[in-house]
Image: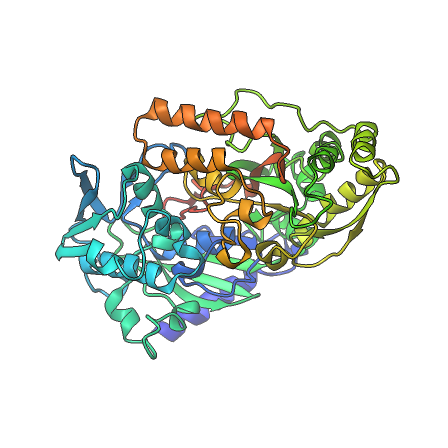
Length: 528
């Protein structure tokens, strides 16, 4: 019977994937997403990217969730309710009654505790958000505990705003895993890390039917999901990295939703009445990073000169039209402490840049190497190379994937963008304003300010205090102070744009809403 269902599905899928000339629409109970499926793992503990976060968010439910249209309100999910102790050092959660994993096992507080403990013990990139509150492999077992099947207690190792902890629990890395199923596949104490790279032990609305990296991801709806069976019986993510091909398939109706569509194709879609472009604001920025381990870039006048080399207004009309909006603050627009309007400190002025370089002792300009974060940043890097040349700076552009160089502080000039999953300015402050130990051996590659080797004690103090402050007005003032201080600096992280993530959605698809924290869920998606 299962084989017959699969054969039927493959026939439907084949029809859905026919060449664009077929003009074949996807079936009404199937959602097809074109995206980049070069994902090394589906393990929630190891993810930190948009596509894999979306996939995992539909395989695993969280204890709590944050809806995309109300980022300040934490709502129940697998935890029906929670209480914060009067001293704000403990959170007690009551698990939802009747929720089950795809295996049929009940979702218990023991599973939730194990999931959190596992993320901390593995220490992969998914641990970044929750580890920030002081949890370590040594203390997490004693601090995160199942009192009984439905009661979970989370004791905080250090004073921190409980809201920040709850935001963390809504992140895709903290999706609750079926402990019993996962441990059946544990090898040499790896907490099922290898097995979960390509398999799942899900608690969410969908189960994993098939996954092949750089090819296809197929999720099957659960008819026993606690919040009701999803309308989409299957969701298929297809690897379509070439934007022109993706555009053709969206236009033909073979693909319902497109990720990572190039700017020129987005411009064409903007004129279409068959699709909608969702420009979803993110919590990160596009920036130029200057490595202050470089003697030339240590000089404040040189960093000032770089502030005037980017023609960001031209970029905002071209490659950045759908991927960001001009912004020169380290506090995301609309969040507590953010300026109401963008400052224009970093205006494009190559003649002023030349003057600053001359004052710094470089009347004949500079030569530096420019590393883009990856292929997606190449167009912006080429534009920066051209505008910097007008200021007398020759940037030797080295295409490639250079995030490891940025993390290791082995670069000169770098262009990239950041993301964050906490809907709070603390998340971006941790990247752009936090460097507690500037020594190489500290190896704090998770903090961008460490990566550029810039020390900022005033910012560090404000970040640390904002973590524990619970009064909203006081927190807003702290972030406003961070922003004010950033404007007085000659920062090694020069922010030009706030990130937006464009999603192309065919108009017959209803209920698909890109999430600023990449936790886009499919359970309520329908098609007309």
